[in-house]
Image 1: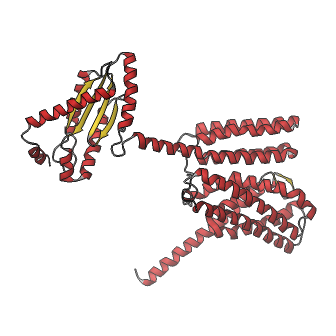
Image 2: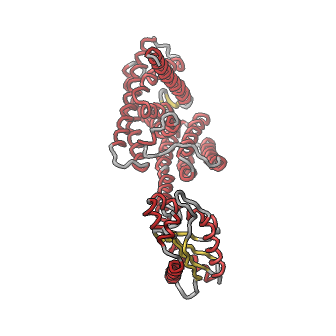
Image 3: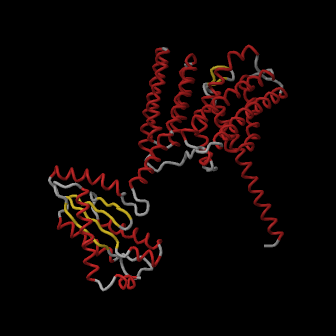
Length: 493
């Protein structure tokens, strides 16, 4: 490619990147103004909404985009200020509105920008980052950022002459709780949406993944319907009886929300909390429950905070499953470990004795394993063990137990097999192994077996000793019958 063509291609790539950035900025502006307009529908006082979704979007955008989100947020603040003037029919001069919009935008961006920087800094300085660590940091920083945005935002509007000083004392608390509800409820959901474009969120958000679920949506939708139906019932009763005691019943709805969070993915949990909170705000506005607005605001915050702590439960369960696999499964072959094999074998033997059914034990090892390692390397030896286990597992029943004793020695516990059936299985396994080829070995695999049937008066450990002794006897017999181990190894290699 000529220098001119390279320069042109570079210019086109830069133009494409610039166009993509402008599109993201435009999308951010449109979504911010959309959720802002939604919040104005739920205002119970001038500049005070039951919750303020744009706060959550701003916090998420500054967390993900950093300073690149500031121009779009400043545009949103200015447009919203002019929009408020039109909604309230204040008819203020455009210069005053522009001044107020700039002040409000600076206060908004500075508060949530500082909070985003502080949260990421605190997370990145931790040696180990996990969901139980990230969630408290997010809740604390989010609440403080909302408080800072409230105080600076009110001060900005007072400076611009849009608010009176007396109003400040009555306005700051509902403003703060509304912003806090927006941050706590919607920031994780907006992070989930943004993380599809910027997947790096998982590296600093404690490994919390917002991947979409692969399971059926029917169960999730059923749980969500139960939660939203109970919420509607509580709020309709509150509207009918106008009783504060009924309004406090919304706090009990943390139970179905935690049910969703514990059993569904983080993305579905965040979505359910967002829908629950949105419906709460809509019911307050529709039913005129303004006198109970602070109760519902705090309920939204408490349920959201509890739900996000619940995000740790699926993560911990997944980690426990991984640890269990490491503890109970052999890392190379995937069969159960020696300790887990004997633990389960004792229970299976006890159950078989109660039922009067036979149980057999097979101990076997791979022939010439040391020679394979010495001649062809440990990689080939590992492949031989893996292929052996695959072949054996394919021949076993659902109730049979397959474990690795160590090295090239393996264990089989066969419930319902007497001695004859167990020996027949050993013969079939030997045949199957002969058909397994592991390059560069020229011939199939083979193994030596020791087979016993457990008696009622012996333990699994005693039966293992008998089977291991028979395995050694079989090895000695095969060694005596063969010309020499060295020649057999040479033939196999």
